[in-house]
Length: 417
Image (cartoon, rainbow, N blue to C red; front, top):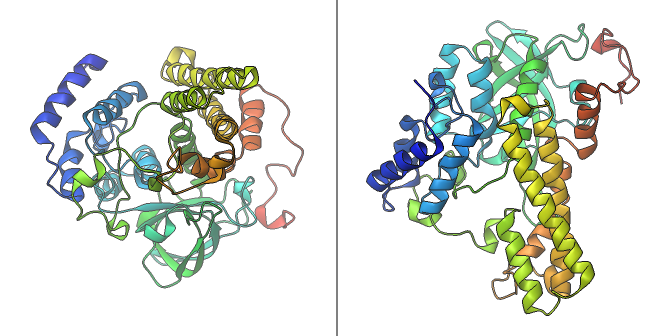
């Protein structure tokens, strides 16, 4: 089947939404209605419930849903962002059939059990271990910076299954059930006042051998796919429809979709950085009489340039003939810089009012205050800015790697923190 044009996708989806959108159904009913169509995750292959489209047509789907004001699929969950494409790429047909449909219809939530207190930037240095016990694996260790761990049913776990192998070669990717003895999730409160991240303690929890994705001791290759999907998502741009937390623990499945079909308020979290927010800041500068300030005008122009560079980079990433291999890393760096720039420009315009958060009667409804305290986050999660630059330098530009133990050194012989 030939790939449709963007206009064909738009017309087809608009017709489907006109016929199927119903603001009185529950969130779960709506997600179950979308899932079989392939619109829930268009970039997945047809074998995994998607349409096999590129990111350009997936962007058309997001834009149409946002323009129509309907609730989108569960795109806010890490199951949708990371687990589904990873399992589609590395899982067996049985695993794809078992794990992906509940992700696409929002029945379950997933979290990412990768980073550890001693293995963040050097992720392959992880110490969480899994030991075979018949058809199961006994898992023990600690994970940290786990987004949504307290509302997740499953975890994407990487654990060390062969300490005799070099550190990159003795790792396995598991689908781990979170609701079991031995798994303890503790929220980490941030300066935003919320607890998006968690630390997870795993004490002799059990993972099925049948839930190994991509093969025993091949977890580093699988994890790199997961990280690539993460960077592609974090570095992407464009409009998206509103969504909600998937899974029963998110406590939204039984709510009406109408609750999620209107613009987000300041209580809904951090605003999206893009042209809409830039226009908002430019208008604030005009109303406050600061639009003639040459320094502020220069900063607004620089910010607009960043937005355009990110947009053009996203277009280039969709063209196979122009890819360098570092597009996800470059896109993530752009997003980190945009968050910092929006913070600085926004606070320059608002002054002390920019410190107010969560107050709907403030100039920005508390939005810029929320952005200001959140803005350091994108330069850390999903791989720090420094790690992104190392990847670009070493893997794309061919610069020398940082000094360290040889790749063939067994993990058990490496110096520990």
